[in-house]
Length: 253
Image (cartoon, rainbow, N blue to C red; front, side, top):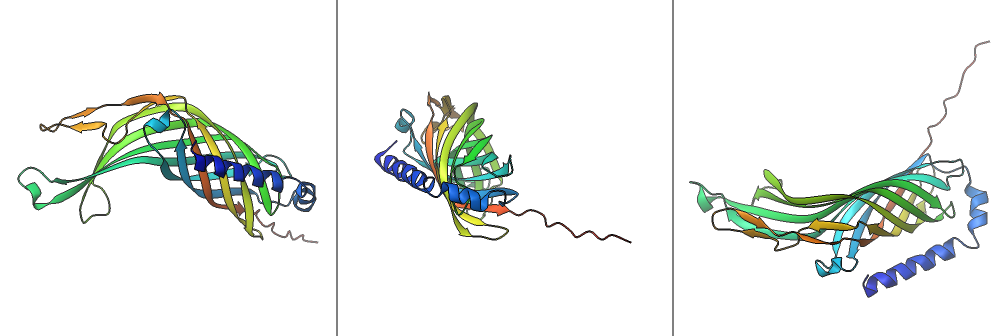
C-alpha cells in the first residue's frame, strides 16, 4: 500500500475507534430495535494494488453496490451482500470500418481491463445510531477480464464486443467503515466511507500493451501471472429501507 493509502487507513481506524468509544452504550439505548428493515448503498471505489501486483498497474477506479439485512432485533449483526468493479487499464484506438467502406466510416475501438467482484458475509455494527462504525467479512468471487468493444465515432453505444482474456477465482474480503447520518426519519441517509482488503490469491490478467495486433488481423495475447491482492477505499451513501406501515384492523361487532 502506498503512503497515501496508509494515511487514509490510519485516519479511518482512528475515526472508528473514537466513534465506537464513549457514545456506544448511549447509542445502543437510544436506537436499539428501531432501525430500518434493511439497507442499500452505492460507493465510488479507488483501488491500490498490493505488492507484487503494483508492478503491473498503479491504481484503479470503479463503483460498488451493497445490501444488508438485520439478523437480530437490535440490528448490530447483519447479512451483507455486495457487488463491484474496478477498471485498472484502458486503451483507445481509432480504426477504419474495413471492406469496401474503408475509412469513410471511422470507428472507436476501446479495450478495458477490469476486475469484477462480489460476495456475501456478516457485518457487525459497533454502535447503532447517527454515527455507525462497522466491520465485515465477505466470501465470494473475483473475476479479471479484458474486453474490447467497437462503436461509431458519433455513437454512444457499442455495436460489437469480445472478451479477449479472463480469469476467475474464489476470494475473500474483509473491511470496515463509518456511516455518518445525513438525514433521519423512516428512510435515513448516511455518508459511508470504508476500507477493504481483497484477498484474491494468484490470478492471470492482462494490462495495457499485452494484446499485440498483427498486420493480418490476428492477435497475440500475453497474460501476466501474479498474486493479485488489493486494498480499496470507498465513499458513497447508505440508505435505510423503512418497515412497512401496519394497516389498522377493523373488527365487526
